[in-house]
Picture (cartoon, rainbow, N blue to C red):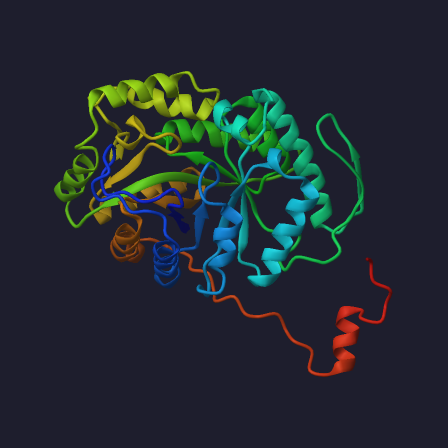
Amino acid sequence: MEVFWYLPTQGDERYLGTTIGRRPATYSYMQQIAQAVDKLGYGGMLIGTGQKQDTWIVASSLISVTERLRFLVAFRPAIMSPSLAVRMAATFDQISNGRIILNVVTGGDTKELAKDGIFLEHDQRYELTDEFLTIWRSLMQGDEVTFNGRHLKVEGAKLQFTPVQKPYPTLYFGGSSDAALQVAAKHIDVYLTWGEPPNQVAEKIAKVRRLAAEQGRTVRFGIRMHVIVRETTQQAWDAANELIQYVDDETIAAAYRRFAQSESEGQRRMAQLHNGSRRNLEISPNLWAGVGLVRGGAGTTLVGDPETVAARMLEYTDLGIDTFVFSGYPHLEEAYRVAELLFPRLPVQTPAIALPQQVASTFSEFVTKTDLLKPQPV
C-alpha cells in the first residue's frame, strides 16, 4: 500500500466556507508541508493543476529540499505539446533522480478550460488526450515519432536524452465517463478514482480491468479522498462537523446546482452522493460526503479512529486499490496525524532515498558514457 498526500497550492484552510484560519500558499508554507511529508514516509505528494500556482514550477522548486518524496505532477494535455511535455517530464526525472510521476488531467469544467484557451467538447478532449498519450509514450521510449491526428501533429519528434525511470514515469489518470475509461484502459498505469462507496468503486475497477484486458494491458488502481482520523471515533466526527460549521445552506444549494450541471461525470457522481443535503452525509460506513457539499473534485472523507479508518482502507485494498491520495485540513497538521495514527496499522510502503546517478570516475569513462565526441544535434 502507498499513501500519498496533497499540496494545497491554492491555499490551505482550517474550516470550509470561511476565511477564518485560512493560510495563503506561500512558498515557505508549501516547503513545510513537503518536508514533513518527505520525513514522515509518505509515498508521494499530489500537486494539482488548474487556476492556481503552476504545478511544474512548484514541484521543481521542492526537489532540492526533499530526499525521497515523489511528486505526482498534474498537467493538462490540451495546453501543451506532447513533445514539450516529454522534455519537461524527462528533465524533472533526471534532476530528481526518478522522483516524478504524472497525473494526466483532461479537465471537466468548460469555463475553467476556456481560461486556458481550450474550447473542445467533452469527448473531443478525450480524443486529444488519447493522441497526446500515444505520442508521449512513444517519445519517452526513445522512438522517433511522426503523427498526424485529428487534434495533434508532430513530424520527426524524438527525445534526445533518456529518463531515469523505464520505460517512463508512472502515469496516473482519473475520469468516470466512457470516453475517459477508454483512455485509461489504453494508456494509463494507475487509474485514480474519487472516493465513492466500496460497491461503486468495485464496479468501476471491474469495468476498467475489462477494458484494459481488451487492450492486452493491466492497470493498477488508486483512490483520491480526504481523511479525518483522531484517537477516538467521537473526536473524529466532531472534527468533521467543525470543518463545515461555517457552511450555510445558500452556499450548499449554489454549489450543488453547479456540480449537478457539470460536464464531468465524476463530479456529478460526487454530487449524487449527498444531493445537496446536510442529512445523511455518512454515505457508507465511515465515509463522509461533507467536503463535497461545497468543494469540487474529491468530496468524500474517511472519518474515524485509527483502527476503523485502517480497516476501511483495507476494504478498498481488497477491491484492488493500492494507492491512497489523501488530503486533510489543514494539510500540515493532518499530515502528521495521519502518519502517526494510521501508518503503524497499515502495510505502508515508504520510498527509498533517491540516490544520485553514478558519476564517471575518469575522463575517458565520461566520454564513453555521454558520447561526447559524437556529433551532437543542434
